[in-house]
Image (tube, rainbow, N blue to C red; front, side, top):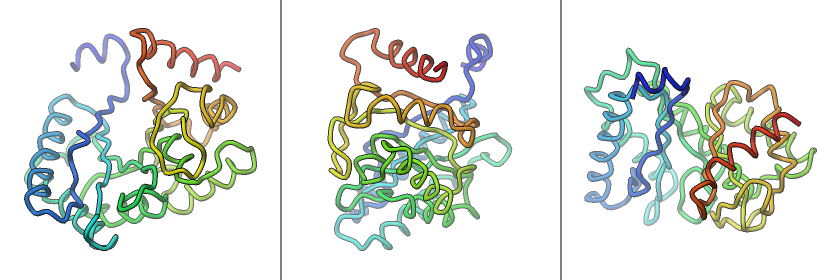
Length: 233
């Protein structure tokens, strides 16, 4: 992995945690399994030399949001216990979610709160998803809305703490809370906001990763080509 990354200039390496992990779960059994699974994800990331491990904070159904936040924070700390992450260029990235009921991370403020809670105990940052941002209700489509949204990111998270963007158009309308990804430029977001984001110097340090549908084996290649062409424009 390390030699191939060097050969093909792949930097950074970003891993996404299994969607089964729910560190905020009210169920002790689910939470214990989630902690064990997340620890294994961290161990693999460290072994592969990955810079980033993306995590959905989880669902706090049956609890208060504050209790869910506390359980997620403590679960991440427990999963890291005894692992040698301090000597690596490695961060856990909290991803914003689509804002569905009981889901942690549906607002930038929730992402920022979890990052600040974890900062003394774990290497943390943020991963933002364009589809999730859009369907959670933030306006990234209009120029003024985009400017206001980035300002909210700065205030709640800090632009410098955002290390990865998941680039997905959306099948559902803004504010719908429905996490349905679409090919870039073909959904309710449209192409212009992606051009704006890719060219934004405030995010020049970020990795941009397509999580778009794969209806054809060449779709991933086309998604990357579409982003490159937008950046060229």
